Length: 341
Ligand SMILES: Nc1ncnc2c1ncn2[C@@H]1O[C@H](COP(=O)(O)OP(=O)(O)OP(=O)(O)O)[C@@H](O)[C@H]1O
Ligand SMILES: [Mg+2]
Image (cartoon, rainbow, N blue to C red):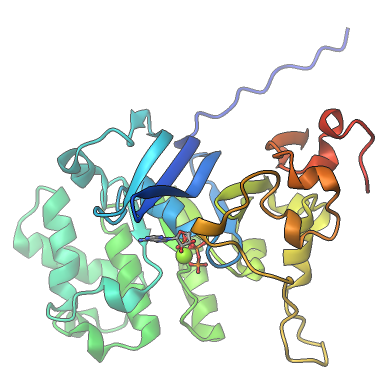
């Protein structure tokens, strides 16, 4: 008998289960991230894509437990990192993990660096916070770190202030801070959006190099499907707080299933195109307070929507090995007919 040997599944570094993150707006909780589940394996680069307002940053901030205290909180679900539940951790427990085990490069580099402290001081703080080393050792480490992120003359730069640096240099500093303690997971939220194309390519190259040298996993949040193709192993497509598709990078580009993913792929600008306008998807992502009450959240923008799509909520389910989609097109039992292609 030709029985296939079961391939042992790798223990994930991060497992997010049915995570729901809500914002209190005028006394009512609205879900910016709603019941999302995914895993990140050791050394894996997982891309997160979706239009503006889909919940990508809120997802990253939820993992880091850095939601705005006055309005945002995790209202359901689990975040299991390296065997530990993060969703129940106290601030002081999280302080030991944040920057040490998990780091984040934030969407706005200028607001993340403190303008009144030198670059050296800001990196040194992270090291002193987590490692038992002297100030002198920390300064040496800072210089080595700056060198490792491609900064020439780091001895000079340690004593400079953020405003003295170009955008690309600032982003390199942000990366140095994020990797200072060799975290197991890096959440990079649009790490290159503000940079020009050449610098962007250098920063991505740098991230890839660091990832392989440090055996790090990365969650790469981006609008840019080019970056996904270049960097990622797996991809999560988010729409209005939900995951609508999750698959490996090749299937995303060659066998996209969800109509939203298809439209996103169609929205990639082509250099040769005569028009210089980006084709974009008709309509807008609903705001938190205007989420559809029933059915698929994408239905009103979906060219393939049927009447059921406005009433029946799709469930993320496997359509082929390792490829999950949340769309009634693939849920034959709910539609009572075959898959519409
Ligand atoms: N502090 C907040 N208070 C209320 N609503 C918020 C807050 N932060 C985010 N939101 C809402 O949560 C939803 C998801 O926002 P999020 O910032 O995660 O989007 P995103 O996918 O990261 O978008 P972008 O690509 O523009 O960065 C949006 O509707 C946004 O308006
Ligand atoms: Mg964002």
